[in-house]
Image (cartoon, rainbow over all chains, first blue to last red; front, side):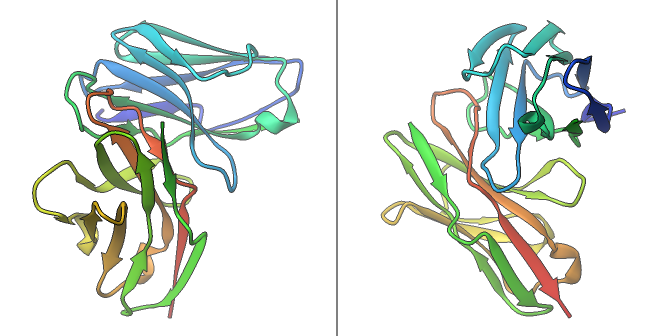
Length: 114
Length: 114
């Protein structure tokens, strides 16, 4: 399997649930990202991991908790979410030490909070 | 800080007609520029990118874009569109020497009609 794979593709959860999104990249990249895509808004960069260390956290609420156990895997742990958190969550990877290289995206997880 | 503006949220066009999707950016440093395409229920796929050199960049599926530094623009064009080009198109920038974190525009929905 190649590229960036996200699971699950769809997730419906209640506001009191705890769930996790998973991302796996098979490209040998050393940086991974979580983006949030909401309707009519620019893609919002949530977290950046470079060499397995979180290097950026764009003021994301604490109900979103990322985890990067190794350079190939990235998780987004979710708890006590709000309806406005419903969105498409995209994972991406890139080679951080090669300027100008593009990010490769997974197909996303469509999250609905009820 | 950098930003990307895509003025057209929707562009309807007839099949086999030419199309231009507009993108303007602002940045205090030199940038790399990207166009991504997103088909329904999919992640983002790179169409083309500008790093340096020739200002006219050719990408996949017959698309091309021209970098205009004086106008801070990177418009995407295709001389003859097909029904299968119906998708959302995102312009993005990353700063030189700043890693590969992308700043995206709000996207343009291209709808190709018969």
